[in-house]
Image (cartoon, rainbow, N blue to C red):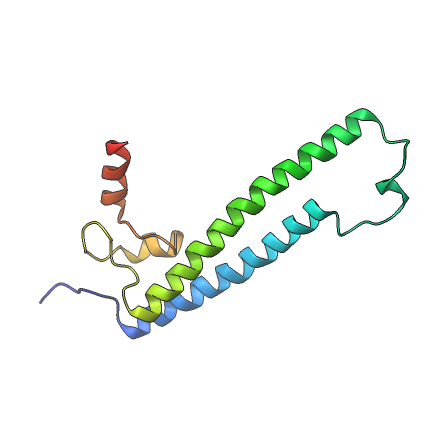
Length: 128
């Protein structure tokens, strides 16, 4: 029996559903983080109150900075998931960009935007 060179349409549909679910969750999380950054959840007197203590202001700033970093990571994750959807549509999803072999389903279920097999990822890590 010859080795598969791509996933079947049924398998690609299964991956598409998984990616769409992850994308929906990622977008919700991103919107929450944006809300924290812009403080869209609160427009009361605490926003401008001069009674804020210095430590509270510092903690709030730190929290917004951390939310900003998380939002940036989430945005990048969303872009990777969108690119994975394009690969599903092109029927190139699940093919390692280094080896040309199929990435195991287990890896794709864990990391649906993966473009490298574990072996290729490990080799990439050694090169750095």
